[in-house]
Image 1 (cartoon, one colour):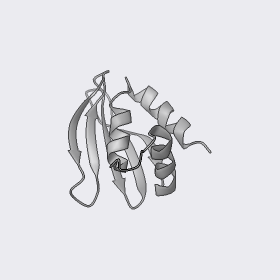
Image 2 (cartoon, rainbow, N blue to C red):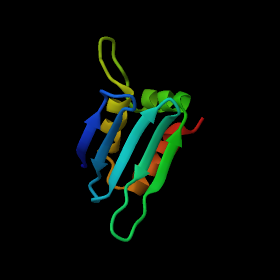
Image 3 (tube, rainbow, N blue to C red):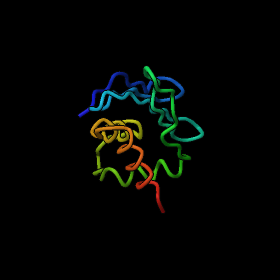
Length: 103
């Protein structure tokens, strides 16, 4: 399981940095344009966009990843981080989000 390095919902663009179990670090950010997940640079590796989705697809992904019960408070960032930090590496994360975004 990964480690949540940072988590911020207090300003204009909710975001989180996560270190996956593989040691890779990713950065999730939400904004008016939707979701962006980047693999952060490391020695010998450049930053790379893993996944991008518009707000409608983000809502679909969140709905598919978790069954929200009445009275439960879950934010999109909270749902996405809860899923992402459980994935072992960037390839699995990329595959999971692409699968969840399919019609």
